[in-house]
Length: 368
Image (cartoon, rainbow, N blue to C red; front, side):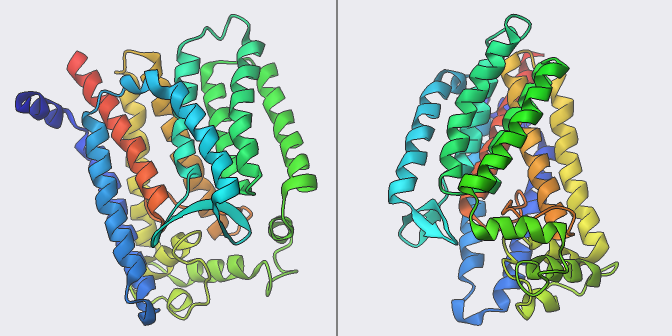
């Protein structure tokens, strides 16, 4: 048993692991910095984040040594469980900022949609790896879209437009890589327009509409809905080359920047660690993407390939949107920065993704 464990350990992609680990260190440093500005809480959020990181690393290790292909057999059951959980949270969940999307467990909150992302990628990886896209492509597009749409609809009911968009993006990315024709991809664009229009008419709360309008004209609501974005842009610009130093960011320390540990942690990093700190963060993300992309050519089954593609898509889209939000290029839709933003559900979910990716990489090395 220990011999097998040692073999798997040697095949672990340590470059991938330590890139993720270093992002987590950045997260802890900045969460600590933000916590300093609120002494009354006694660094509670920092302590919670540290616990989340430890649990996340242990989760990554467990999933790394677990045979990922066994997850394929459970994907349908996990999908059904995901639907039931999303229904349950609508009735029994905790409402935060107008969104009913959390289960309160003692002093901790669990956000199910973070794990729904994993379930959806797992389910789509099984579906696309088990069918031939060339045979009845429209059928497979509709079936995968309908099953993904059920999860998206339930998330919109919370309402959580940002997470719903992420689920739609996951499906879209995996459809693109599955090899559908351009005319089928056009249907996705049309569907996106329909979803957005429906959301605007029936699901979006007033504050969500105002965020989009603020993005289109940020100066009009600079003291209202546009306040967060303007303060984030100020923070990003004030960091300079080397930053103000951890604990010395005026925007975060003086609480000019709301949600500094969640949606706008990139602005905090920019202000306190400057351009060099931002370059390091981008470099670590780039290494993660590079290692995952390189691993694809060694994987000998479609299920593993689709899962890696889904993981890359999820992390990249979330990173791209979050940074875009922080510098005013995209509207604020509540998307966290992977491995860096505060939140146990997101940290653990992302570490599961990396753990399964490591499992795929380990077994591809052993077989080749």
